[in-house]
Length: 366
Image 1 (cartoon, helix red, strand yellow):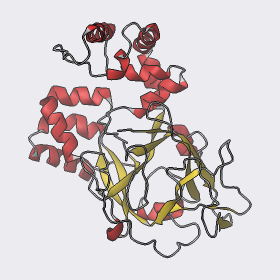
Image 2 (spheres, helix red, strand yellow; image 1 turned 90 degrees about the vertical axis):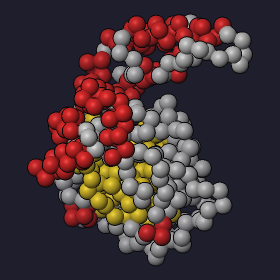
Image 3 (cartoon, helix red, strand yellow; image 1 turned 45 degrees about the vertical axis):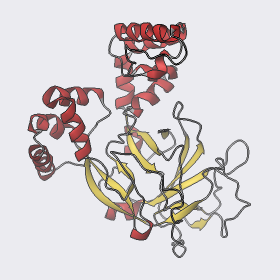
């Protein structure tokens, strides 16, 4: 999505109003447009709290309002059952269960309501989840692109208990209509951007900037821009570590030098030697996972690989971009992990070619 002079002026004005003008150059250089996904019916609006993080419904809260009349076949919506090309099968996983259906996007509709996303100008993009394990591993996803003009039919006329989904906890979701609003996003999970902003305005300024760009309460997802998971991870780099055969290297991303790893290992050894329940006056490292075993030589090897291959990870990560985020929300009756979000990424070249068979995903947890 192109960034206009008016967009850059808007960024500068927000920063000026918050006393963060020193970070204006970095932000104007990095800003990207995106579209917030919101529930079309205000009565079904989700509740969120904090930057980029949903809040679970309170115990005893009202159930989602009754589903709207069945939407037109091929229309943009989240949840429900998929509309597929006549003769096409609903994707299944190895167990034979149906992949969980997150939603579908009529790309001709998006070209009008959410233009310049980089998506094809027409066709139907359908999003399925095949596996949800934990935030430590990629989520399994499958995206189907149905060319424009292909006859469509609803996969199941009367969805019921006979539709067994890959993730039983997620199950079949409530169908909802959505609306889109163009927003501006900044790469809060990218290390270089964070460092530049912190140098300009300090960590308090960085946190204030993130708060200024938090999602509105009724946002349940995002198309394009930056994903910005609340965990602070750059999921493009996490996925790159998995593709390059070093998945555990993701736990060391916050470290900048081998000396940081040695520092944390010494802290872990000290903590392991303390009696149960004793306080560790020396504090704790930023990355808890990397010090779960002080003598873990595989962890040392993974950290060494990361430090030696940052450029290769950078190159791999920069070839991908954020495609879509869907949040847990009551309108769809969707709960991912501990009321978290799923983030989908696509190779930039694939997006330009209208190809969606290599989409990858991560989730947050907790």
